[in-house]
View (cartoon, rainbow, N blue to C red):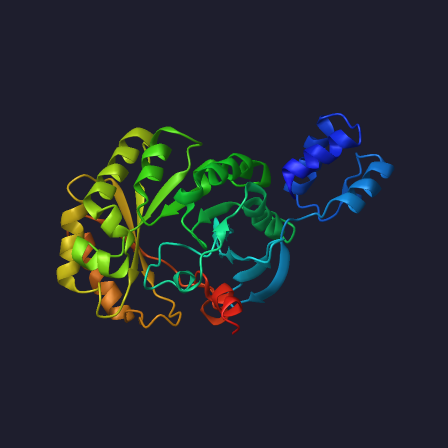
Length: 331
C-alpha cells in the first residue's frame, strides 16, 4: 500500500485522518482487500477499491521449498524486480528476508544480485509491502534486511519500515539490519532509529581477501567497519552478528579461522553465523560440511561464539537475487 497516496486519497475524499490509521491496522493484521475492513463505511471501501491498489508490488513468480521456505518475485509499478523470502522453522519462527533495493550497486562477487544492473532504492511502501504480502499468508515474527540491496544505502526508508514492523507482529528485538560494511549507515544507526539488531556481512578476516570478494572493502576498510560495529555494540548493548559465507577453498581454512578470531577478540562483542553457500552461478562453491565444522570448532576453541546457519530453500533458488537475476537476464 502506498501510504502517502492513501493519506492523499483520504483527504481528497474528505475523510477524517483516523480513517488512514484504520486502514493501516487492517493491513498490518493481514487484510488483503478494502472490503475486509468492516469498520470503514461501505461506500468508502468501494471508493478506495477503485482508486488504490492494495499493494505497490505485483507478484511475478513464487516458489515453495520442501522445507517450507517460500520465495516471491515482485515487480514494482515501473517494472523493477524485487525479491522477498519467508522462512518457516520448527520452533515457530516465521522469518522474513526483505529487500531494500532493486538490484545492488556494490557487486559482491559471490552474490547473484551483484550480477544485475542496479535499479533504484525501494520506497518505504515497497519494502513494507513485501512483509504485508507474507503477513496475508500467515503471522510473522522475525525480519532480516538481507535480501536484494544494501539497506544502509536506503536507510531512511529502512528505518521507517522498522518503526512499522511491530504492528505487523515483528518486534524491534527480532529485526536485523544486515550490511556489507557501509560505514556511514553503521555510524548513523549507532545513535538513531529503533533498537534493532545489526549484522555485518564480513566473509573474510583481512583486507586483501575481503577486497577481492567484496569491492566495498576498498572504500570502507574492514578494521574501520569492525571498529564502528564495536561502537554500535557499546552504545546499543547488543551483540553484532557476523555473517560469514563459507566459500570452498577461498575463506574456509583453519589459518583463516584463526585470523578471524584475532580480528574479533578479545572482547565478546560478536556472534559468528557461518553460512553454507547456496551456489548461484557466480563461480563459487560451498565449503563441505566437514570443513565448516572444523572452521567452527577452531573459532570456538579460540573463544568466539560461532554457529552454523540452517540452509533454507536451496531447491527454489532462495539465495539472494537468484530469481530476480534470472528474470532480469531473461532466464
